[in-house]
Image 1 (spheres, helix red, strand yellow):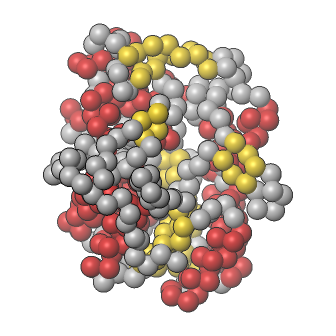
Image 2: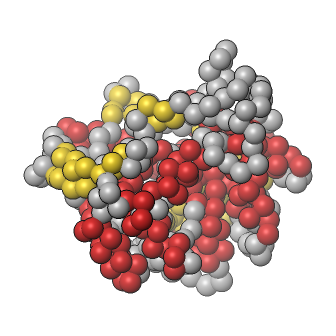
Length: 396
C-alpha cells in the first residue's frame, strides 16, 4: 500500500516503515561514529520505542556495546492500518542490533502491569542473568494501577488560576492565545499517578527483589523544567507536580540501591519534538523559537545527541556524575543558557501568524513532527508501494 500521513490534531494516525527505519539507522550511525562509551553491558529500557527511550537504547547498544531489552507498548499493522511508529522503530533497532552481533530482545505490553514486569525479569534471568542499567522513559496518558485496578488519566493544566498565553497550530502556522482552566485536586492526583515515580519504583523494587540488578547498577528517568514561558502549564502545573514526584523517587531509589552500590538519577533534558510535547499548549511555539536560536548558535541537539552526551559526559564519565543542588543531571544546560533564553524571550514577544516563518523554526518543528512517524525523511519514496506488516526480530 502507499502510506501517507493522516493527522488528527497533534496525533499522526499512520506511520511509514521505511521512513521510521531510516530515522533509526541515522541514530545508529551517529552513535557508532562517536567515541565509544565505557558504559553499561546489559541494559533494560522501559519505554524503548520512541524519543529519549529509543535513543538511550541505541546509545547503550552502539556506543557502549551493550546487550539490551526494550519494553514498550506498540501495535503491529492490521489490515489497512499501519503499525505504530514505535513498532517500526523497534523492528529497525532489532535488525541493526542483530547485524552488529548485539543481543537484544523486545517485550510488548503494558509496562505498568505486574505481568510485564514478571515477564521481563524472567527474560533477564534466562538471557542476561543481571542488568547494570535501567532506563525508565515511559510516556502514557493513562495508567491502570496493578494492585488496586484504578485507572488514572493525566491532564495538562495549570494549578491555581487559569492560564493564557500564545500557542500555535503547527500544521497551519496560526498563532493564537490559548486559555487553560486550572486542574482540580483529583486531576493533580491522577496526573501524578500516571507520570510520577510510583511505577519506576515498582520496577526497581521488583528487579531488586528478583536479584537481577548487578552490583553498581544505575537507573535513570527523564524530566524537563523549561523556561518561565512554559512554567505555568508545565513545571508549575500538573505535569510539574508529577515530575516533582519523579525526582523525589530518584532520591528514594538512591537509598534503596546503596546496598549494591547502585545509583539513581533523574536527567533533566532539553525540549525536543515528541508526540507528547506536541499536545501541550504553548510548548510547540516555544520549541519553534528555541530551535531557531539554538540552530543559529550551532548548539542544537535532538534525542540521540542528548542521550550520547548523557552516557558519555555524565553517567559514565570518569569521576562523580555532576548534578545540580537537587541531585539532578542537567542536560538542558545549553537550552537554559542566558543568551539563548534572552533571544527566545525577544522572539516570543514579537511572534504572530504573520511573522512565524521568519522569527521561528516552525518549518523545522513540523518536519520533525512528521519524521516521528517516518514521513518527510530524505531518501524515501513515499509514492512506492510498501508492506505495512513488519516483524520485530527477537520479540518475546
